[in-house]
Image (cartoon, rainbow, N blue to C red; front, side, top):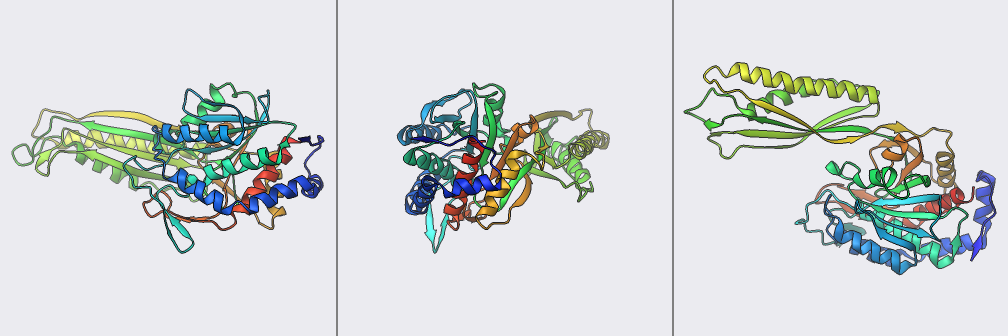
Length: 406
């Protein structure tokens, strides 16, 4: 077991780390892990983990963290799985990956291989990131790399959809580690070029219109919740989003009605609003809420043959804060340097990930890919290809060691 000397991880100091024979040995071991990691990758992917139902996969990670030799393993009140290396402390460099997928537990997630590609829902997002989390832990323990600042490993819940970053919010707002994480690095999906340092903010709403309902012929002319949704969506679709700052909106789910010849008693939609700018997101949100309220007024006025009126319920079902890591931050500069060390030109990105929460709190956080290529993310045709996995994992290992020995 050894300890590095404390120093500032400039380019020259990273070069010194690369000359350490123990680091070189760790890199060699990562190169030899291809088959082992792919087997682990398949096992993880085939464990169902819908948002809010990640417990089966969480139990697997608790077991794997224990088998790898990590310490202080636990499943917290939110459902996150955490563990430390080499031992619990007051400050940490955290590496995380989210457990959940966008698919219901009835989805067939059996992995099939065609050529060099592995196909299955969730195979890249985020089975690829979760495998990376285990791979880094495995190498640290097997090579006995002991950092000055210990590592915290976290497999988080509720990153996708209306999970609303549940796990990482708990980690930074309520858990025992909430004031102990100096640097936060998240694995989310494959790739090596992308460094997400800007947090894409979002607001998510569930809109419900409720009326008396009736027969499509005999009660024609009364208020219609589905028609009200249509009015609201039409108004929303006329909104001109700016290219800079980039913004977007999406009606992702519409529900309501019981038959083709029945005027629905209730109809609802779930809407996702996003922008890289907090002020632009506020403008988008105001337009959306105005559209919904105006749709209510118009549908009620249009129903001339009924005394009934629609009622409107507006519910916030998700809020992800925006933010940006300073371009001069130690974490970002070290991530750029370590990426370039492996001959890769980094791409600085804005996205919605677990890093949103620490970034919004003014902490140093980024999200990285765990290597490989992908396609069809969030679809039943999702695929993963193992290209450059070892290179990406070596980059992340070097980054973490540099951060932990500042």
